[in-house]
Image (cartoon, rainbow over all chains, first blue to last red; front, side, top):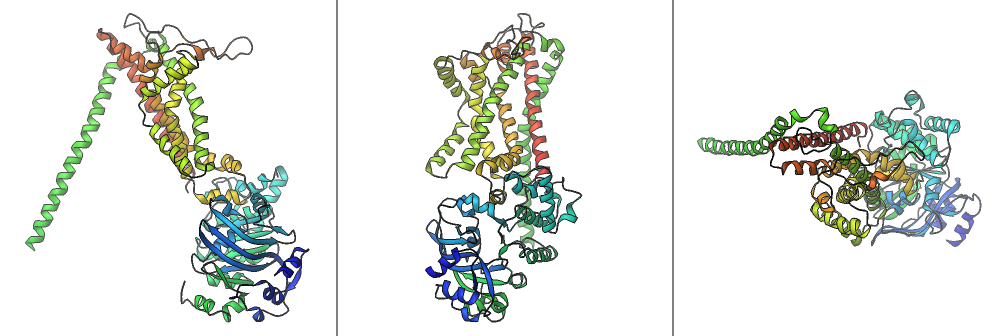
Length: 293
Length: 302
């Protein structure tokens, strides 16, 4: 445990997934390291170790240990109430908005080595570095332009530079062509799928290290969903993506690695292909085949 | 089968009876209000000419006007709004967004709701003791405005909080997730999105304040006043003057009260005229509140 943590605090450690998982995952239930593609190398973006999370007296996350690869899409699946959103929301400290929440453990972000949930880390800093897209499209009741521009404005960007970056973010979110003639219109004139892509543009505009998706398509129709899935696939070139989803097909389509959670515990982390074809844990298999959840 | 018919017939009869009872109850309310309005219109309308607005009160009913009282009402409302709006909105935002939810804030919340129901004369007594005797603000427009501001403060606070509560939590989370501080969330999101509800509450509160008589009589508003407060704009620097704040005043409802209590029937007609003006002001304030609410609802749908 200690050895691997020291290693990861150094600049951009490279490690094989095999080594990495076998050393990091202390939870007795996760022991599928031998099943991962041997020799596959990736950079670690975030490392979660011995993470516990509490809502008041209720423990929502129990001893979570896992790594998130840089420029990978990691999907977190599991039945309702398993703690997948809770885990995701640790990364931008959005839990801090609510009273009686408590973190234990460490989430180390690389290459900076910042401990996301450390008391020394300002939640504001994490929210400036890690963006989030929510379940329900939550565009502000402002113009399309102002929605995409808000994060930039908070950082003091304005004038021509602001316009340039807004356009860039709308292009990255595959929305520019649809909205370029209606930038001054209210965001609420857009369709649900467009609004969600606007939220993605808003999240991308500030050039975050990591993008968190919390069931981003659960309120959308299949066509809008597929556009967003394509987008997520594209986005991993630029940044690290974590997506929480109820939809297992979605996890299978967009992610490189899938994590399965149950009752606040991390049951299994595997490359997505393996997870859905040949999961190690019985519980995972039962969930994927629809026996519960 | 006949059993069913009997049961159905009985139920339909009950339905019909309640229908009638409901109509009668509604009519009692509406007709009373309608009769009052019509009576006021019939009595007061002939008095509504330019002279009525530009004359001071007089011993002669035909020459008497409401100049000093409508100016007084206007200035009092100005002071009330200028005080109650910033105080009430700030307190509402603090309680809703900043304060931790614990027994103390619960206690404050309950008491604010109670304050909204305290009889207005009690506010008058409080203002007499505190503002007039303690702070020596005199029986002035300032005192009157502040008294009514205290009176409507709870309404403004409650309206602000209600308006903030209609904003979905997702919007707050989105704003925080982009790295906003609490103040940035309030300033750029919560205040602009809640302004419709808040404005509606403020206008409703003002339209309540505008008809208040008891607290203003308590602090010593005049019933007969034949001069205007000093003008707020002066010809020499610094061009604005706040001397009017210290001026004695009268307001429309007090003027009405004064006229109604006179034996001469002609003064009662004057009172009806003043009442009509007051009602028209209140109705147009309420209409403005409805328009604002409608327009904001059209613009922002959560």
